[in-house]
Length: 325
Image 1: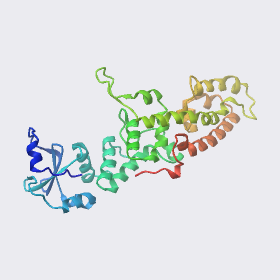
Image 2 (image 1 turned 120 degrees about the horizontal axis):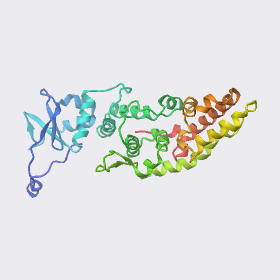
Image 3 (image 1 turned 30 degrees about the vertical axis):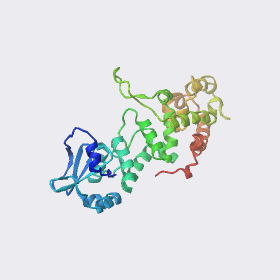
């Protein structure tokens, strides 16, 4: 957004050391006809492009040049309140759009697309950010199974999960929170204390989830315990038609150790059957065909129920009532 122009008296009262603005090395078009300044960085761009995409810029430019406003090479200088990085990323997104959400981009670009899209009224930037966030944290069980917890649309980096959760809280992106909260439960130590951004001893900074997210996650963990026990109840049972002693005396005890010891693996409550058999070899190799078939049927039925109720476990509205900007 544009800065308020200071009066002459304000300028006289403020004693500062003038620092010459620097030109952006990435966004300086020689045929541009307006210069945006954020912080100490200037960007020479095309007024028509900004007006076409943003009603906020359109209204700003319609005001006309103010008396005493700076110019650079004959171009009006418009000073903005946003950070240099946000304006750089905003302009990059407008000049170099990346519509293919399966080509990952950095989180800072996604967050800037959301922030600047809302600030400057640019729907396709906001929607592009939301599509990438939803790609990582979907709203259907089928899409959740396809992702398998692998970052697809946003480049993986330290602290990424907590950065996304915090962004969702800041801008009320409620649709991604259930799946994101569940992912947070994979590492409750990091959830409590933050994720270290560097292994170096002199770089102790960590990325942490906001307090509201931490509270929601731990409340959800408690609420998910009964769902977890229902989903894996078959691990303590023998199929009706089972005729192999190994299923009960060897496989089942080991399965209970894998799933419940030292504590229930709540983060695996929505793991699909194929993923579960990859993690627990005995399911594939040691359960008899009858037990395996019955276990899978019970498992799939319960995880469907758990997914349907997932938002409610974390104190959120039902899936159909979740909203995003």
